[in-house]
Image 1 (cartoon, rainbow, N blue to C red):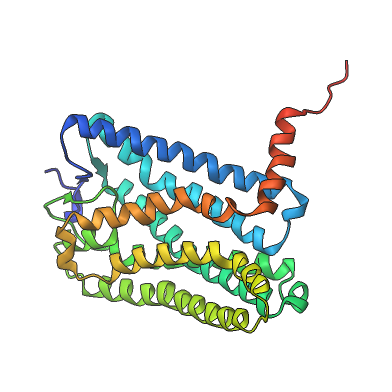
Image 2 (cartoon, helix red, strand yellow; image 1 turned 135 degrees about the vertical axis):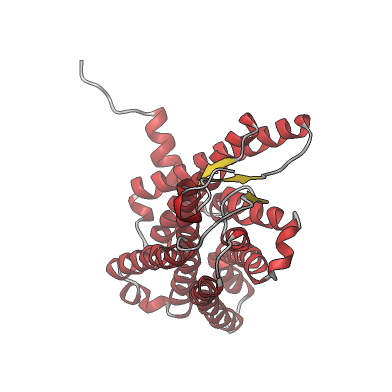
Amino acid sequence: MRNLSGGHVEEFVLVGFPTTPPLQLLLFVLFFAIYLLTLLENALIVFTIWLAPSLHRPMYFFLGHLSFLELWYINVTIPRLLAAFLTQDGRVSYVGCMTQLYFFIALACTECVLLAVMAYDRYLAICGHLLYPSLMPSSLATRLAAASWGSGFFSSMMKLLFISQLSYCGPNIINHFFCDISPLLNLTCSDKEQAELVDFLLALVMILLPLLAVVSSYTAIIAAILRIPTSRGRHKAFSTCAAHLAVVVIYYSSTLFTYARSQAMYTFNHNKIISVLYTIIVPFFNPAIYCLRNKEVKEAFRKTVMGRCHYPRDVPD
């Protein structure tokens, strides 16, 4: 194994999903199809929200940011996995691994905060619906979205600052399909106590605090819904936040399982399956969960995107 100066390995080898060639081909086709559909779904949501004036409201503003994040997220993890299936080569340079790790952490932290912001938005819409326009003006929505992105990328920068100072002398085999914190900490040959402490504290802030905000918001939302006298009113109120609640449960449960486990669990392949859930499956299903039963989004899509395709503007002779 070739080393860089300072004891750093020159490259890592991502194991991915080692299996027989026919199954490798099947996995490639499956992940490639998911990749293309995820790109298409989330891109359509972003453009629909951007083009439709009827969707220029905080709820859909945050949804547009989430879909844009998912577009970025899926491009951090899947393309290298697909390339490994084709070339049977899971090698990634040290710089490439750290770059992938930086964007992966940044987007994961941003999504945690953004989901909490969306829960707070639903809380204001249901519990203070009469004052909602003044409680959540577009200027506040913009600041909350910017704070989500800023906190995510700042947290990632702080984590990477400590992880990049570690030395990697060998082995360089990562039993995963992308560069993640736990396998890199397990491979280091230097003292990792400080990096682990920073990782733990920032995970506490970027995962548990947003989760606490989500739980608090939905506790108040459920209490408010239960006070609605009619079943139709309760159903209508709950339907406005059911999609977001489903995404929150899937994303946070898989994320907490991955990062709250003991380091010894990393040796099991089950960890890769859980990682597939929140890095690939969640971005794939998010558009369907949010928009499948949302009449406003479907109507706006029909009028804007489909309307522009079927009825283009007349071009003068």
